[in-house]
Each structure stands twice: as structure tokens, then as C-alpha cells.
Length: 436
Image 1 (cartoon, rainbow, N blue to C red):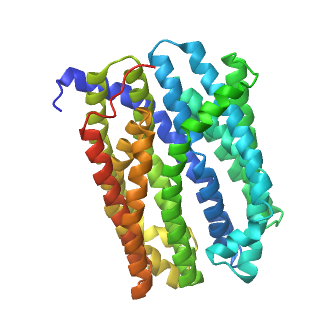
Image 2: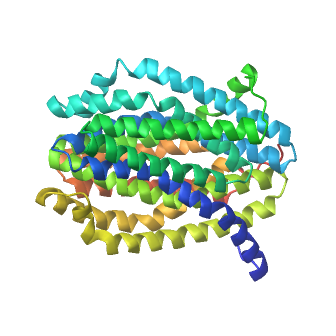
């Protein structure tokens, strides 16, 4: 969609005002795990592999609850666009109460199942023991993690991505210090890494609660009808996220069964992929906030032009990140103190990760735009279809005895399928629903 230079600059300013702070906040999140990986990599094996196994379980659990951020952002942004500030804050508080309840439920259900879950991924012996230790300690921080998600969604919906950046940077800095002290200073091993992250996330959650209920003077009391509505609206996003988690969990399980060197290599590669994905997702966050606000205000034309501009930003960012991966590739094994086998695997995987970045740039932007539009039902169906496209590719890797590079090429098939389904939807008009 062609834009005049003036209109293009205006959209760029809106996008960057939201995306640049969101970039910092999003990058800080995977840096929690990346920092953990760097520190834990200095412990004897299988500590890093245990961190990877436990983190896979945690990623599934917390990832399924990402609707607390995304759904809240879209709901609050629509109300802000329609001029209903009080209603926007009420929906934000409903999301916070829902986050607290879901977090406590996860602890109660998953704690006794921790050994079975790590065995399901393929961990045995000492690897499984350390993975269970990390997982059970980390579960204590899940309510705080979910409150951070919901609190972030409230502020993003209010078109504020700067405050989440400040909270994320503070939490990341504290996490890094605590991990160094607990793991290397006090010798607590993987347990120390888990405790450091729990404490850092808890402080972040406390800050969000103070901001929402203090600065913005939101009503504290729970609204059961509103909480139920927030939960119902999030079901489609849970399905969407569950499908994505199925893909990544299958990949982790396949890598685990290839051997200890392969799961360590895969763990590092996933950390790098996640870091890059969160960086690209900054524009998607802007897409959620801008799309919700413009559709809430009834501005279809503005939504269209902003979407096109964000897609261009997604492509450009993906190209830049892909080139950055190529440049950084020779230094990655040394950063993680990798042995010869792990180093060789990582060097091969970096080529695949670099090649997928432009595709990921467009996919994440369109995903954010459709979430902001409240098009969750389509996203759920599309996610199921793209998962079905991935499964034959993953099974082919297992059946043919392929290695890690083949496994990551199968993930490339999944990303391409997402590009097709999201691009087709964005081209149409069904998702352009206006009003609060």
C-alpha cells in the first residue's frame, strides 16, 4: 500500500515510539535464560542440559499463558482508542487477578508431576534429577511471571512500552547478579540459578502491581464476571500458543534423544532463536497496541497503512538480524564454553537460524497485528494447520536419522507455513472489526 513520505514518517514515529522500548523489554526476557545458560555452562555436565530440559517445561507452561499479556494489550488498547479509560483499567485488573489464579493453579498441578514431565522429554538419571530440582524451584516464581505478563499487557495497551522496559532491565540486572552469587559464589548449582530467577521475577511483579494500583489507581477488588470473560477470550490464544509449544517441545524431545551433545547444542540454539524472536517481536507489540487503538477508534485506513509499514520494518529487521547472526557465528561456541562436538553442531545451526530471520520478521509482525485486532479465533485455527504442516517434516527427521540441522530445517517448514496463513488473512478484510 503506497504511502506519502509525510504519512510514512508519521507511521514510523508511532511504530518506533512503541517498538524501541518494547525491543529492550522483550530482549531482557530471553536474556534471563541466556544469562542462566552462560553461567550454568561453567558447571559440570549435565547441568546445562538439565537447564534446557526444565526450561522447555517452563516455556510450555508460561508460554501457554502469554494471552495474559497479548489479550490484555488488545483489550485495553481498544478501550483506549474508543476513549473508555475507566473500562480499560477494569479489564487490565481482571487480567491481573486471572494471572494470579492461574499461577497458583500451575504450582498445585505441576509440582507433583515434575519428575514425569522431565522423563517425558527424555531426561534420565542425573540429567533428570537436576532438571526436576530446577523445575520445582522455578514453579514458585510462576505466579510472579504471570503477573508480569498481565501487568505488561496493561501498560502496553495504554500505549506505554517505556515503563515495561525499565522494569525488565532492572529485573534482568538483578537476575544476573543473583545467578552469579548463588551459582558460582555460593555453589548452589542449578538450584541457585532457579532461585535467582524466582527472586528477580517476584520483584518485577511487585513493581507492576504498585504501578497499576498505585500510579493509575485501578480498582483492586476482583470482578468475577470480568475475570471469566478475560479467561474465555484467552482460550483461542491458548490454543494458538499450545500449538507453537507442541512444535518446540517435539523439537526438544527429538534433540534429547539424539544425545547429550545434541540437547546441549539445541538448548543454546533455542536460546539464541528466542533472543532474536523477542527482538523481532518488538514491532509485533507495536502492532498489537496500534491495531487495537486504531480499530477501537474506527480507523480502518489507518490500520491498513500502519500494518503495511510494520511489515516493511519486519522484513528489514529480519535481514539485519540474519546478517548479525552470520557475523557472530564464529564466536558462539566460545561464549558457551562448548566442546568440539557441540561447537560443530552450533556452527551449522547458525546458518539455518540466520536464513529464517526475514521470514520470522514478517510472521511476528502479522501475528501481532491480528492479535491486536482481536482475531484470535483465526489464529487458533491457523496454528493448528501450521502444526500439522510441521509434524511430517519432524517425523521425516526421526525416520531418516537426520541430525540437528535437519531438525531445524523442519522448523523452517513450520515458519513458512505460518507466513502463508498469516499473510493470506492480513490481505483480506475479515479481521478489520471496528469499535470497542
